Length: 551
Image (cartoon, rainbow, N blue to C red; front, side):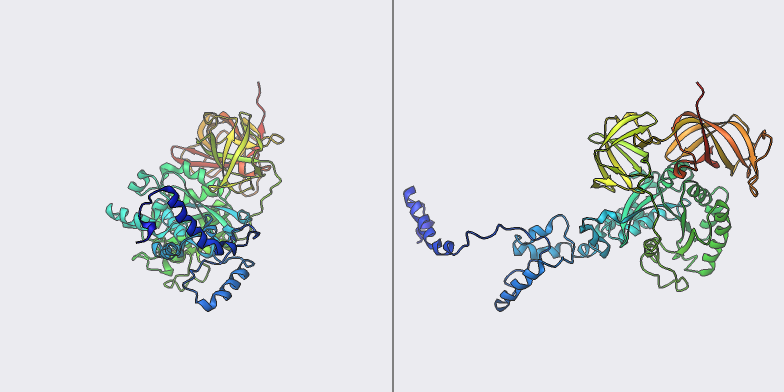
């Protein structure tokens, strides 16, 4: 029996046994190179292959290949520092890994994700896309499908949503659950708040803003549209649904108009539900929807040749979103995601003054605010001023789409953690500026307004709700200054006593509280506004002049 297997009589004996083992190891230890260079893990090393797989005679060549691969950049992106671990992982774990999630592994690392490993990845152009349209047109479903196709939501999560949706007899809603996260939205199938998600293509980084389609939540939709660079108007091609959305009370009209007012220059019209049995990818139905929409969009101010792009798709099946649809041979343009990728660059000036309208705020280890940086650039530890209260704040940390960065450029959706201000002291609609160039604030201003829909006449003393950038405030029309001729732009010599639908006028407005605003000429994003009353959009306008307060 081996003496090592029995308990020793004394501890001295145990030492002797160990000493004999050490004696056996001596020659092996002597062969070690004590002056070897310290081990530095190679991040880009080739994948670890267990030695028993490599034939004995190929060992030397395998070492050579490994040496060469240190000079080459790895083709597969390694995430969360996996690459450091590969050399030290036992082979049995390594072999077991692919069996755990084979399908997910392929989807999680599609081609667009490669740039994430590069240090200059955030420099991709950032574009905010808002999905607008009538209730139940399929905005959230398309958003969910895009996230799945670009690998932002894995298959397992979607299968879970599908099971839960089936239990509620709502199988077709499961894709929208990727964006409609709270229980109320899921139960009713209606988006209430503006959902946020992001995805990447080869050239650009997109933030999806999924706006609610229901008329009760139009104020939320205006907040979403004010952050967007590009709007996607989703319309349903299903018989009856398109007509409902497009009639006087439907949201297709109102949303398109509000998007234009919010400063969206480019509009993509997605004709959704083309796979529906009542449509069946019919070109006639597609053209019919197109013919009805174009005159209206033209009237709102979009140029049909330059600003509008129509395309058919199916949100539920994902047809024509990433890959061309086989059923739709008559459509020859690019599918939706490649089309977004091929759009020309938006020109944004980084050297302008800092302007960040606040969309939302909450407490989380300090005060956190959300908003889109309209101009200028912000960096960590920068001192800024919160208008109109003139609070001096410091930026503690800066997140772009939940990824921490040191500086941000215009057009990016940011989360800022601030120091020097309490969460209760901030309201949506406040603006972060740099101290050298503060934004204007006040209560009285002159504006040109277009009355879009109002049954009776509007006289001085009329009250409405003003939506300007992310700010919502009560406003009163205190005086009508003149009427403007729509065709010639001439101003009337006399003051009008009232204005009615479809007329353009210049009026003086006064808000209930102090708000931040700029003239349209100086800063278009903060000089456009909408007037709403009784749940309807009554007028759109632009700020012409700020009037100083009389004490």
